[in-house]
Length: 339
Image 1: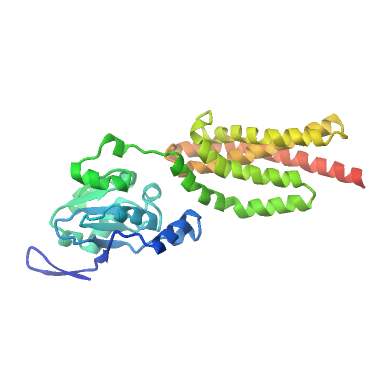
Image 2 (image 1 turned 90 degrees about the vertical axis):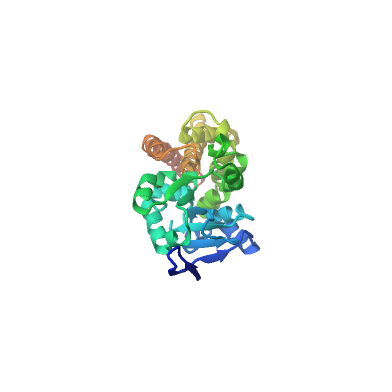
């Protein structure tokens, strides 16, 4: 709690929380759990106004989400910068996603300004917002209803010190990069979502006598969640689904050839059918997982993702079902042959 003397000599009690720029081991552990997808909605801080360093009425005010990774990225970049951080209630969602979901919004920003009494805490009327939050904020509405001017800072928090020094963002600061390190960081959470189903399906297939099928399922999931993010820029075509399908075909070829060759005693149609199941099932799995990755990248739009879902999901589902039916028929035929 901080007691502030306003320009009219009025006493104003503000619940400003004091913080620093140091990221502790506990913070790093929280980041690790968040990256792994553990308690996905449990990585958040209390919304409100935070004071960093020896902030004063003239200190800059930065706005962010109450997702711990967003908040920590911002405060760790503000070392030796006396400032305020206004944290919006985005339900523990990062700035970019929250702007799309409507929680990093004009209404919430206005609400948080009012609740924290920000106009009584600072003398200026300048708010610095992350650029990726722009889709959720109507700057003119904020100005009209609160008197605060919205200013968009750089995309990455690490560029803020240079931004403050220059009083403007360079073109590089405005450009979204999504290099291999950015993509690799996302792999654990992508894998975590499908890890348990992958293991269960693999175990079931193994005990049904399908060792190769079990390995194929694991390989398909790893191709879609690990290999795809790494190879994303170099895979041909524009749509994620077709990129994933191409990767799936390449992944399936060794399994298909091996399945064809190990069934030398079977008829040609059966050997072909064994190989065909892998060429149908694996690409459809990889393609579906690749499509899911659209929500983690800056390469896609909401409308583009919807279009791709409606365009490709029916085909992927059909290809997968055909592959499963063929596999079931082969299982039944083989089982009867053994009996």
